[in-house]
Length: 517
Image (spheres, rainbow, N blue to C red):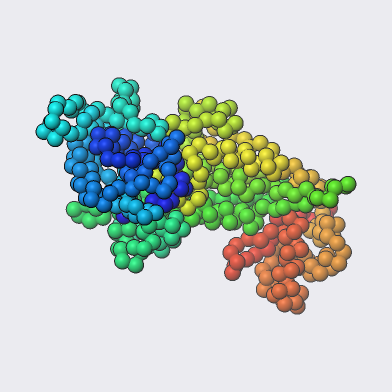
């Protein structure tokens, strides 16, 4: 079963239109050339889809579809199998008959092949079938954009180079077994992506589901799991693919690389790592400020860091990491900036000035399979739109432009998102107050009535450096609900931060506060 539903495909969600070919009727040669082009995947977008029974206008499907007559369905399926046998090396796409808006369609998924380059004859008809001579010359067919064309000599050379180096994530991991896969992660993903496999969850084995998602292959000796299967659905992919994790360091002092910092590591499927890391940042780092403007009814609202920009920067880092390298994605949170670091950096052909302006379209993608999975759960958008989105979200928030740093050999990439200038003053004031005690600082920034409420907690934290909710209840003699309100007051100052999970939370001072001289 093809995971992406036909209605999702036709409505233009999840899959770019240039990865979909619509055919009004059955033209065997054109269809085989398109299948061959998808298998060769010269653009590195993980193949594509073909739908028979749909008219197009300006490249877009005209709905409702005209459909395929019932009496032709079996014959078309049979002929597709027969004609695909003419592709060398042999390549057979997934084929389904689906009903949509009252008509039947022939629906094909043509994943990027791993045994190419693939070639097919100019005419797939046999001489006897056509009644006249046909051009049986074998050609390499490619889809550099939305059209299928014959490959030029330079493009053929590129194909041979491409297939000589299958992407790491698409390779079989010989150390992986079914014990390394967690079915719960796979089922969560299938449900969230609204896959057609939802209906099969209760009747299909884990092995069948992995094969349907094309993250494993059936071999004579059993199921062979690909690296992409471990990355997307593994309990701890980092145990077999070292470096497939996200490491976060948060510095609590104004001095860069200071000794006062918090470390966290995020494990599990890479899509879950991204979400867990973003949830942590959203909960403990991101803040909104409301500034009243004289003479204007509406106040200015902005964030220290816009969430959507950070999300896109982290997704880009995870998408473009080389998973062969034993180096994790890094997040470094300073008082005035957040950095996302991945290895390696952009390809050498990319002009960094154009890249920073969001004007570069990659010719080939490092991990297209990962990108396709991320799009299915709305973690990633269309190809080459990531930098544009970061720029757009920062501009909307009034934040400084991002910075992109790499070296001459493009061994790394650092994306820096700087704090909104409206929060810089807070940092400067805090740096000045940092020479005094926490109680002195908070007594100035809080209203007196609020400071009186939290002063007992502040005194405890000055002595111990941190406090748990249970300890706060004990020292104040207040209920859990009241203590939660007190902590809301404290964390609102930005000088107290919450660390840990909901059931294991600790409140600590967000930066060093030396004793008064």
